[in-house]
Image (cartoon, rainbow, N blue to C red; front, top):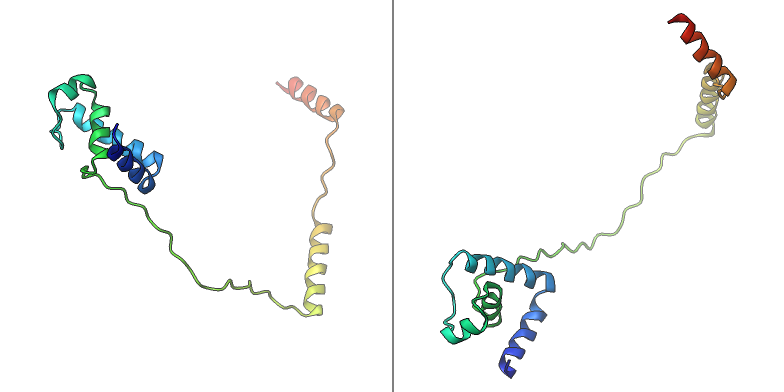
Length: 132
């Protein structure tokens, strides 16, 4: 590699992430492998030297900045709005007491479930076996 190629590679690396470069090279190498025409003239000796490797050819094309492949980088929208506070409902003390009394009534009316004992479960399973 000469100095010019190194400079071009560094310039491309600043423009694209390594993932974007890999995607671009992979897409172009696939095109070349499917007999797409080359975008740059490469001497036959150079092709033989790289053993007609599609990825190496794609890399040469990428480094010469002639690939018609572009990368879309969506930029997030910048918002300058201030955060809004959530509105809280203000209730009178009387309303709070009414809600608390309603909750207490619901708790009294509701059935309190006891924890299951292993003995109770055994009895239930034995009764179910007898019924069958």
